[in-house]
Amino acid sequence: MEDIRFERHFRTPHSEGYYIMQGSSVQSNNRLGTVDIHFTTTAVPRDDFLVSVYVGKDVGFYSDEYFAEESDSSTGFDDDEEE
Image (tube, rainbow, N blue to C red):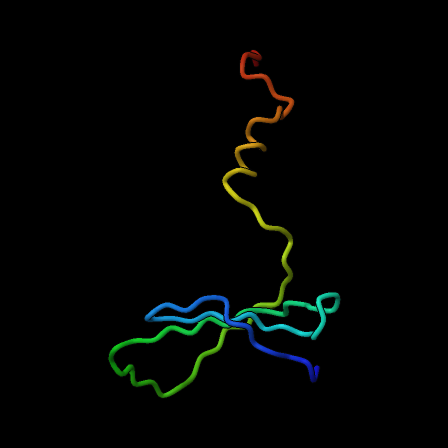
């Protein structure tokens, strides 16, 4: 895992997001995860440091257009059927 790098995904005045990437070429480029960092304008004293780790994979990207097409397709059920 020597070729791990962070690519900035977004930056706002109060947060930043990075992709954790592996691979240096377009063919071997693999996103391993994300890191979200949130800033405050005041100090938040803590006695511990908390990290949440999620292991998973991308299964798709869905938009409003995708869901509109899905709802327009027939589900095989007819609203006029009697029970």
